[in-house]
Image (cartoon, rainbow, N blue to C red; front, side):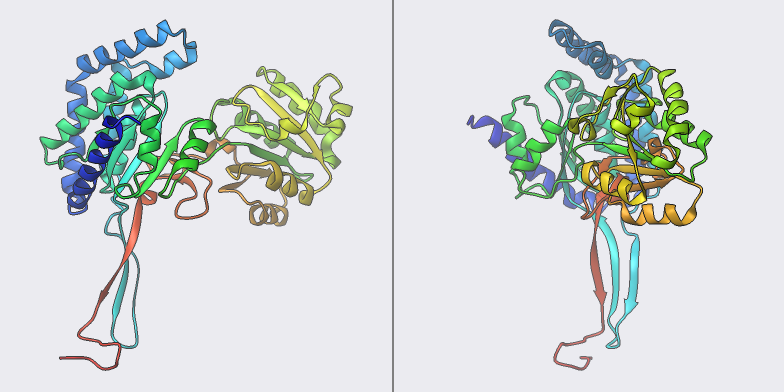
Length: 425
């Protein structure tokens, strides 16, 4: 193992820890002023950011990356302005740091408060999109956390330029040194070093494909917040309004198919399958969706492909939908809990009792009733901004906003209480 990579990253870790202690002391107004300075710095640096991005685009073109990948990499004046505007929006959001979650007094006179505090130092490993550099850095900063970023090799010049502008622009307004750092290496070794640096890193968040996330989880010595897949389901109950069910199915699948909250499997109650399936198939085909079905589905839709066992476990991220006919609510819930990814699952029904059972029994981060799965998003939840989605059960679950980038501590005040009894003074 090359000495320069671990030595450099461990130095970044020590610097981040020192910055985190200083960041925790900043009040909300001070942080918001720094955020506005960062946004202004990004706008001023537009020519330099475009020049850096041109290097990445040229390298990506030489590697014959897909048109979709090139689009994800590309920066232009509009996208840079969107990044700056996003930072200004974060400045308007309520700061969770210092919020009193709960407070009570004990019989012995102790006053106890549970208060939100920064997590400390957060590592973010991500792929492709340069705007994630700004999004991740400013959300962590707003919550008083120091950040070490490791972006994908295809965007290295863009990521470096953005991180440097944010840190320099923020420092001019009082941002502590080394609050935002970006690993300058594209070697895979850097991922391993960062993931094993539990002395300096409190949390790591991987954002990218399943392979990246599995690698980080296998290596990490600190907590990881992540989701592997978005295998989202929509169950059309026998008591569903057919028009609503069709509209929600089409929106969940086609409004944007390449995202983690897009629909991948449609479950239909057997009692309505014969009447509902042809109608929903017509609507989906009008949007270019390829359908795959179980034997009962294919008995109605005779021209579609057979859904295999792998289909039930597939996150297509494409205009493909698997369909299964189920006998009951219990069968739908069992299928979702067996094959789903615990991300987002929906029931369409006019029966409130059936909906209540579905919401209680499906083991997913987001469970919806009569709502498109595409609403599983921090912005749609009113968080204002999102660091990602978690399908974990500890600390954070579902869309993660600013609050999920905090921990808490107990602050206990007394007047001389001793465990042996009595009060001194």
